[in-house]
Image (cartoon, rainbow, N blue to C red; front, side):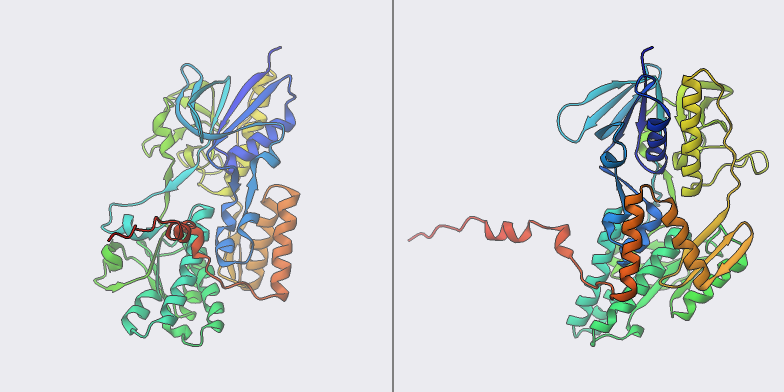
Length: 443
């Protein structure tokens, strides 16, 4: 029997977990698993706020692909075209010419990207919060604003640099805002020139509530906790413009800001535009509960998808409902999909994915949190402990679990670092200046 070739496009939550499970369930005589992703790691996104705030090392919030997927073939590159009619993917490696990879089964799991709007100035002045690079940049940027504000005697410059705007009141926006404010407030102990009231933290949310994943009273509790920290919460408000860093809101307010973070939702990866797979109205790949891709009522043989880029029916809800784009669903869908692919290869029938969303827990900074799990509402320290415990248990590999726990343990005894390493973003500037040709003297 010739082994089946399984191509995994994307190594996020779905891609990594599915590839890892397939490599354990299927022998080399049954299948060969190839994983294609431009990055050499999987980012555990629930840890981005903690990595950005310095609670854990950024390296410990990512999982090295080659270390975890030792029984898989890892290709560092990007899929530029997927022709499922031919069962061939065109891959552009990070170096060298393109290559074609034929397959028997394909898992399409490139995830999602930030969903932006054509807001004047957003492209030039905004920063997202979906990658480890963005998390590291935001940490360095916020700390650098403190240095700039402490160094200037101009009150207008100080006010601008100490104004931080976060757009989007979902889990990503709330956790990023709360963790960064917590970090900046903690760092002010080293800035005698600045006071906590000098900082202005603004949340802009287009709807009338935050954290739509939990009940309204828990969202209201979150807003109350943020208001107690003197944050400026703007509900039912949109960002209209941020040209030259001047934030203009739909409520008529306008002010300059040194930091504008966009966390207002996600959309399927643009990579899907380069495939011939069927997609729904919102651009997601259409799937049935077995996580097989479908075209109308017809199953597309050998094509599978899950996670943020897929529309997967939620069997625990009324007809027409789809699974939310959460890590909780992605990890479980990956396991079910891997088992189903193994079933098909072995001549068995695939099983439908069904999982009732357990709930969500969010961190609001050190020792603060909010959540709702199986209908039980938790607040404060218990929610924070639950948040850390759950995500520590879910991050792949014992290696990463230990490193994260060590980071947290050291934080009980040592103050977190409050240093901006801005040179990371332009590392060659000083060398270019030092190595610039010296103009020859004439005369």
